[in-house]
Image 1 (cartoon, rainbow, N blue to C red):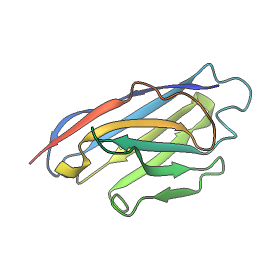
Image 2 (image 1 turned 135 degrees about the vertical axis):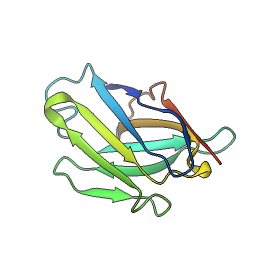
Image 3 (image 1 turned 30 degrees about the vertical axis):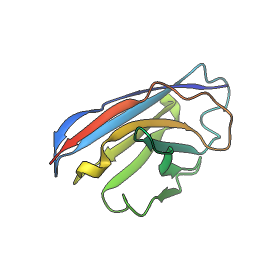
Image 4 (image 1 turned 60 degrees about the vertical axis):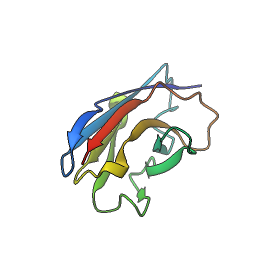
Length: 117
């Protein structure tokens, strides 16, 4: 199992930007580098949703509600994944998490993003 530590969240105004970082701890061998990594978000009372993902070969996918505004990248040598968020909207307010897709890893603590109107 791989544990992720997310950081970079904060409080921004509408239209602002943030860059989130998640680092995989205790990731041995190719546990991180071989996996597709996803950024997810959750608002209290709602289901967690996938925001973006990046495969081990760098293929990216985005949810429609962030496409063109958010950009996911990774540095497998550092077991790190990034989410650059631009043109933020109040509806982007959520706790953001990252995790390997299709693996039963535990969720980390996430990082809170708050966008004011």
